[in-house]
Length: 98
Image (cartoon, one colour):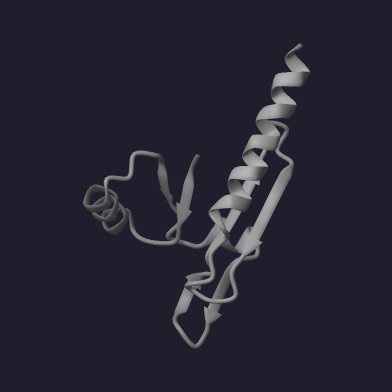
């Protein structure tokens, strides 16, 4: 698991330490990746120059298996939907090794 955030490294480091985040948090301060994935928005009612909350599950073959892009900052993918997709990928990997 990797998270990409459109903020400065110092802010991200402080957030990760405060919240005990142990997975990689990559910074995208110029918003290049965020723009490439179509989740950047310059101006909204709740903020400006940020990314919409988004979740992508990308498999080993670099195929997007799940995509959720929120309409506002508190519109997040449901955990159970993400877990179901990940379990499905785990099943595919288990069967392909047999």
